[in-house]
Image 1 (cartoon, rainbow, N blue to C red):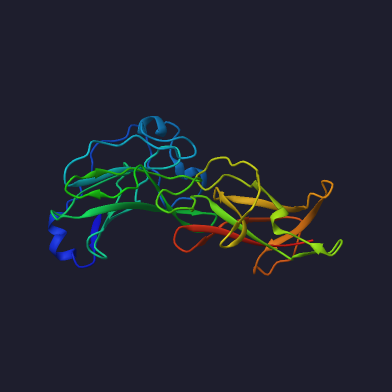
Image 2 (cartoon, rainbow, N blue to C red):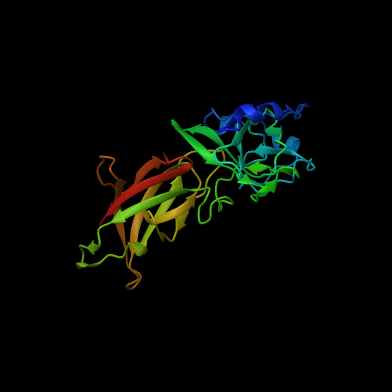
Length: 291
């Protein structure tokens, strides 16, 4: 499916054709955007049938075809290389404001459109929606090539769903989610300054991750971000979270109590939660910690 946004809608719609690419994908079952949990990721033979998929972390796929002058096309796959049906692909006309071509991938995860015969460059982005633990997320997808291209030249732009890793379209942003925490600046044990940099969070997966894969326990040094002290680039999933304070004085560590910030709950030794959708394609958990 396709459509123009903005002033070129009527003038250029007639020149745009989106073709459904034929052929079945062997035993492959397309990844649907409205399913929940592991059952949404298709059959075990799908990755082999797809042929161009990345690894479990969403590694880059090979280009899905040759460049055709005046056309943009590509393929969208999940973390296991299986096609994603219903992903939204936005072809942004960088010459005229708010004049975008909006495409939807077919059952093979493919899209294809002829571009208007005008002197313009285009940038392509893609996303898809996925329901997990009763939350509906929008995930930005990683482009095989994030650079703009000349419309008359045409381009192939494939996309892969990655659970983690830096985003190609947005510097210093990640595909993974963020855990932000807030700690009182005073340690009540000795009234010393409690540096939030000394907090260590442990995130233990509870059940499969959002893509149905098995997660790993995460214990990582925090970063001071624009949102506050945080652990970034965590695969979206359900986690049991614990916290401790390690001030380095003789290797001393202290357990911290934790609760969801502004969640109305009580402090406890641990909390189990899922990431919440924030803004358009960002996921976050916000915690309060105390000694």
